[in-house]
Image (cartoon, rainbow, N blue to C red):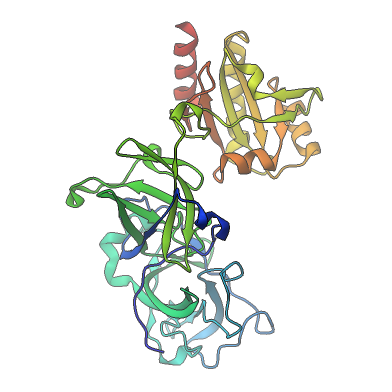
Amino acid sequence: MKSKKIALVALSLVNLLAYSQENIIELPLTGQNGHGPFSLWYVATMSPISENNGAWQKISKFPEGLTDIKYGYIETNDLQDTINPSTTSVKNKIAFAYGKDSEGNIKVAVDTNNNNDLSDDNIFTPIDYSVNHPSEVEKLTNYAVNVSFETFVHNKIVTVTVPLFVYYNSRNDNLLYHFWQHSTTQLKGQHIAVSSGRFTNFTYKYLELTLLPNDLNAIKIVEEKDIYKKNEYIEIEDEIYKILGVNTNRNTLVLEKNDLPKTQLFSNQIGYKSHLFQGEDIASGTEISLENYKGKYVLLDFWGEWCKPCIEELPNLKELYSKTDRTKFEMIGIAAYSTYEGIKKLIDQHGIAWPQISSDAIVATYGINVFPTTILLDIDGVVIAKNLGGNRLEEKILNLIKE
C-alpha cells in the first residue's frame, strides 16, 4: 500500500442521523506538523508489556546491541467506533523497544515503518525530560521521529505519517511521548486550528479548537479562555456554531449552526448560561438545584477524592466560604469519580460547610476532564470566570459581592 500523508482527525464519530440536518456543517481538515497555537504541556507514558501478553502482536525482530530490552506499543487511535470497520487487521499501533547500550545509556528504537520489525529502525537517544520540557519542543525538531500507522478514511485503510517525540524520565526510569501534529480548516474565511487536546493519540477524546488570527504569521500560544471543546460554541461572523466533534472517516470537523440567540444557550463557556443540574447534598441529603440559586453568585468546584491538588485547595475554599454572605454567594462542590463514603470522610475531616454532590453525569455534561476546575456564575446563572483559585478567586468574589 502506498504511504501518504493525510489530515489527522478524530475517531469519535458523530451520529449519522445528524448529517441529514440542514444545519450540520462539515469542514475538511488538513494535518499540520507542530503544535500550532496550542500549549504543549502533556506527555504520555510508553508502558512496556510482558513478552507473554497475548493482546499484542509479537515483535518479529528487536534492535541489536542493547541489553535489558523492554518493549510495547503506542496506540494511536481507537477503531471500535469507526464507520464500517474492515475485518482486515489495521496497523494502528506503533511498536517500540528500549534498553541500554554498552556504556549503560538508554537507547530507543521505534517501528517507524510499522512492519513489526525493530531491527531495521534507527537506535537513538531520547530527549532528556529533566532538561527539556515538551513546551520547548519546537527547538528540538531534529529529535522528532516520523512514524507511520494506519487508520480509516472514507471507509478505506490509509497510512498516515506524523512526527513523534520520545523523552526519557530518569526520575521514574520510563519513556514518555507525544505526537507533534494538529489540524486546520476554515469557515467563512475564519481559520480554525484543531488538536487532539493532549497530542498523545488521535482519538480526539479531548478535542480542543481555537480561532486563528487573519495574519497566520502572528499566531501565538492561545490562552485557556480562547480554547473551545466538544459541545461548546464558537462565534463566526455573528453566527453561533456548536462543536459536535471530529469525524475521522469523513476527515471533517463537524459543526452545527445554531438558530437560537446566545441568551438561550447553555454552556460552561464565559458569556453563556450555565448548564442546569440537580443532585443530592451528601451531608444533608437534601436536593440541590442550581436553578434555585439565581440571585446569588455561585462557584462550582469540580474535584475528586483522588485529586491531591483539589484537596490542597479545600482550606482556601473553606476560608473564602467563611468570609462571604450566604445571601450573596454560594459554593457547590461536584465530585467526580468518587465514592459517597470518600467524600463524606473529607467533608468531616476538613469541615466542609458548602453543599457537595457526587455525580459523574454532571461532570460529563460540563465536559470537565481537568481537576480541579472552578466555574463562577453571576446572579443570572451566566458564566463569568473559570479556573480561579487561591487569592485570585477570593479577590474576585469579595469584589463582586461588595458591588
